[in-house]
Amino acid sequence: MAQNVYDRPEFFDGYSRLRRSVEGLDGAPEWPVLRAMLPDIAGLRVADLGCGYGWFSRWAAEQGAAQVTAIDVSERMLARAREMGGDGRIDYRRGDLETLALPRGGFDLVYSSLAFHYVEDASRLYGMIADALAPGGRLVFSTEHPVYMGSARPGWIVAEDGRRTWPVDGYFREGERVSDWLSPGVVKHHRTIGTTFSALTGSGFTVERLVEFCPTPEQIARDPGLAEEIERPMFLLVSARR
Image 1: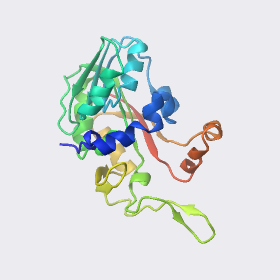
Image 2: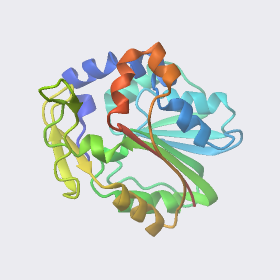
Image 3: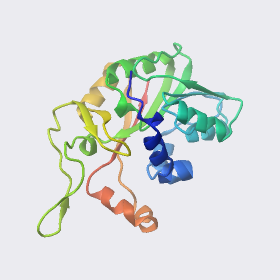
Image 4: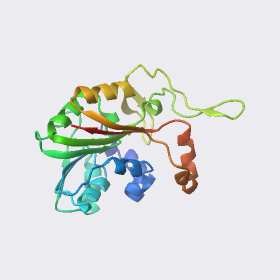
């Protein structure tokens, strides 16, 4: 089973104060790029894996999705999503992405935001998603960039001249990485970009776009804290077709 840190009270409390938790999709700087990767949602059968507060699920319903299956391992997240209201087309369900099984050919779009790096067996997950998509269906997801996650010493290193660098230790040593983020002992799974690409194509996907997210000058002007994202990529965004 994937580690369920989101049901830890201290983690959930810290997560609830993040900008993307308060403002939703508009509070996620990578959202405009992800949105541009999406097909026309109207009439599609959508799965939202790691749905969290349900921001994307509600957005998809507003765009005219025929149905939305929203899945998360966290009972706290699902409870918050239901409290925030919704649509009769959204079905919130508890599920573990390590073992999840979706109906074959049951979806036209599978979407996931910042959840796949918690999954150890990504090849199994991609294969299951491929089977769940109808021919021509799309997978659009974001994950932590492996350069960002690939540091055994998270945080900036400051040189004598004041220049900051981001350490990347053992980039090609894939596997479990443990860090303290909102709560101690958070387990994520490090994979290189090449491994992710090979796992997707090996599962029958054609990768159409792969973006190493970088904020725009306009975004940095509105939120100067985003300037550090230019120093190292934080998110990897992928669009693939079945």
